[in-house]
Image (cartoon, rainbow, N blue to C red; front, side, top):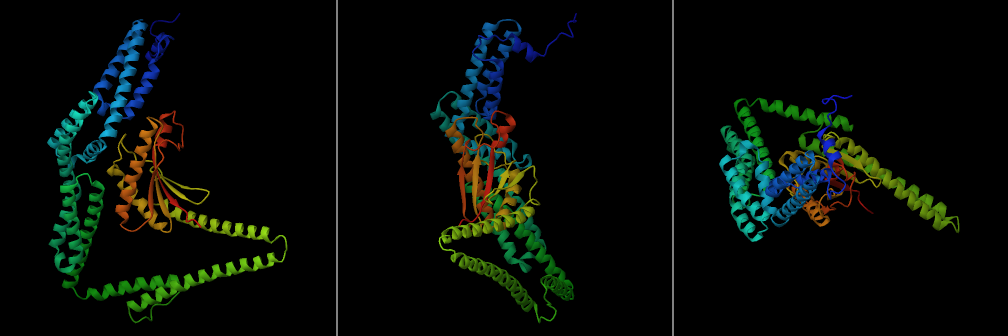
Length: 478
């Protein structure tokens, strides 16, 4: 006979055994739905309904434990109803007031050391009033409160942006001026000052323009560092002019080494310009040799085509086969080229962050596994910027390819909601990449919602995999 201690069952099993078949909803179903609702940030966007759903669920568990199954069923139904209300409120907020939600996300994503606590707290209180109005189904009041909330959110964002994006450039400019950058590297110094002014203008006129601020900040920091490096060199040479000769010798040694790898002797060149011309000529000769190989290959194909023409009645068939062979050769060459470049790409990315795929058609897919947007938001988390920066390097490596940014979601939520959200996220990534590239490039953005899952939407891990951004480097089409 079992003693009481050894006969105890896990509480989840007790609740399951006590639940009656007559209940319209089970505890397991309510808890599963609550997890899905939490993915939609109902704790933030519908806290009242979420709290009531939690309380009703706890009541149901207590009632089942005490044997009152009828009341438990009613409490479970009540909990499920509040969960649905919370989901509806959350989606209403992110659909009707997406800019407000994303402004708050940007503020919250700023590092704590960049924020001013009192402003952030006030912004949260103002945002909470918007949430209360949406929960009360009073959108007119919510939109009025949203105008006030935007003001405090933008004030908090401005402080954080100035600390995060403008201050590093200011420090770089100050350091460059100390080493007399105005004298030795005025262009680089002016470029960093220009970037600083651009950020200040954005902070004043559009605090939400975080991506533009980030891009300008990086440019400004690079220019300031360049100004310091050149100025430091100028000061050094000014103190010891004899170092100029050593620098020239070092530069010439680099040219000679490069020439050696290309099979040419640059030692007899009169100056650096002549060395550069010799290098350019060697490269052009290599390109011409490659083109000649292609022409020879084309001539062989043409000769084969002529021989095939001798076979009357079979000409059409052989020409078709020949065209297929030529297309196959082209695809094989493109695939080999892509495979070689992918080897270089693997050094850029952590495999935990980005998966690199090569399709049968030789399209290259950069699957951004750790580009985790907040639910209902298209704000790119700042801690993933470096990952996207490497993606721009991939675009440079595949310079002849068009780029398609694909947004995908899981199957939680309405189809239309997921479709629009995937489009916004794809556009956000496209905007980031274009800002970073700063050059003409064919880039399109497309949202596919939940249409193209790569894993089972019935599991949490599967849904996580399905929520993704794919950067597709498209093979040039004939």
